[in-house]
Length: 324
Image (cartoon, rainbow, N blue to C red; front, side, top):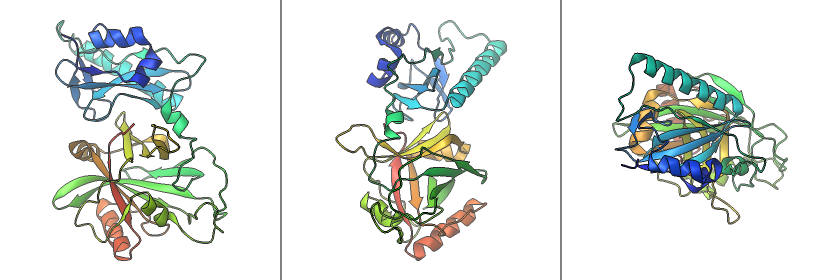
């Protein structure tokens, strides 16, 4: 029986028709696997499965995920991340082989490294999107706060000055769980470290929230209900980590643009990942500089969000996981 496997056109373009066909016919597809997004076990014979190709500078690795977690796609990551994934895959496969040989009818095959893209370069829509013009404010760099509440700088690609304040804007990103109507939701809180002025303005105002409202974010007056979805945006979680927030395509392109991207993928807690996968969504809150601050606990983070909402300086939107 052929596996329940999806190989997208962009993945096929990278690995070639022969390899794609071998996967689809079951000749080179795993039976069991650990989902690259939620880390839960999967079975290509019983569960719809996506092929996810992680492409570094010199190496690429093919992984597998529940189709309900992420779609089949090519994801551009750092070479260090790809090499780390290869080491993890190799170690897991060796441990599984040492513990118990796989049954012949259901081989436990780990995702295998695939040859790097040829001289023409990968299709790599994620890489191209990083340099595409975006209607939301451009940022010179980004940084993130891990679930353990440690703050790590994550410089992003340099972008041209747009006439805003001369102060270097950096995005602070905090992952946490928010309790709304007795349900825990995976949330991401975004706060710049400096004022964000509209491109072309005199640079003296703070247009961070108005720019997001123009993109579909809605003002938040309290945390009694989840924010409404915003079309075209999504949150990319892969290999069990937070990679990026994606915004709608522009200029006739079908590929989403990267609005924020972690320099190194951010680890998230098991509870955060479980909540995100159960609802297939993440709540993204945004506030101007100085509104939230660094909060060491989720209860304090919630209190800061409530206070920001009461002051009228909080916007939010619900986003699906891993749109591509």
